[in-house]
Length: 353
Image 1 (cartoon, rainbow, N blue to C red):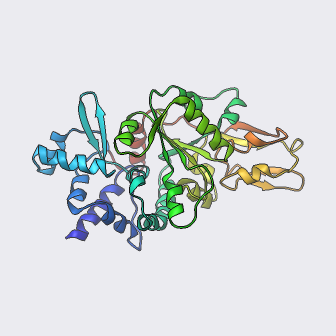
Image 2: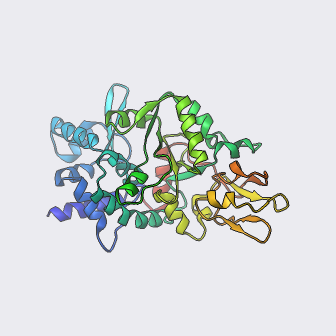
Image 3: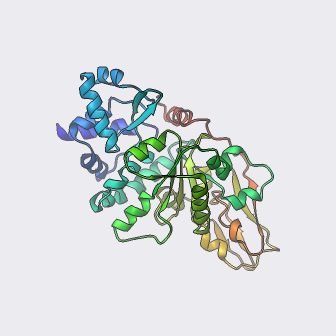
């Protein structure tokens, strides 16, 4: 019976926008068993991806409101469900595995959990990245790339979006922490994950990050660009999180790098182009590219447009100024909100919220 509840929870999570695909080894069940008690697993399956208050959840779960409130609050404090304080009320909603309760385990990550996720996440990412046209994540160009463009939509001007935020939290990258626990530490900056909007209070209450001002956020972004970190954010025009990623640690980039045509999966707004006559073939762009989208030719470097995800990291350090960003044909505006994104993903999977 205990095993049954985790199998049911796996099915429930796989029905969320983020998915939770089954493996032959069953490692995903070990992750759930480590995090959720059977009682918590049952409660998690009573939640929706849209916020609800305790009375509605308690009624569906067949619990007294006080009992349900205590359980939900305890689960939220351990990063198993999301708690939002909106107006004068407290709301709860189901959370995806990634992005979701995996990231919320930042303070609880130990070697065992790191090893379980190191086994599961590559399968999870490759399966989910190719399952639907609409994804949970998108790549935005770094500042130097944006400055080189004449027309850039507001949602791709990440520094301008950050400047508009009233509250910002920065947290340690859980992917680099995971790699460090299994003996593959990364020498790039670790405090590189930013959270905005309703995420801010949750991260502060759970001790997952620290609040910073806009100036510090922009300074950290500049250091991330210098360290050749790709800017990945939620696939919506409303900014909720921003991660600075490397392919050696980041689950998203690591999975993208294994694909033959990562550009078709991430669908960037822009891609890099190299002017052969200006390129000195110094190789700096080759070293900075996180998805092997640049190749060496006889006298110059060349961008593979099937692989380029439009991060702009190659442009920002080109000594010859031979690289330009151009709009990618067929690029589309991201959904307006995260719930619009959820609806699109589920519709493409034949599901509804």
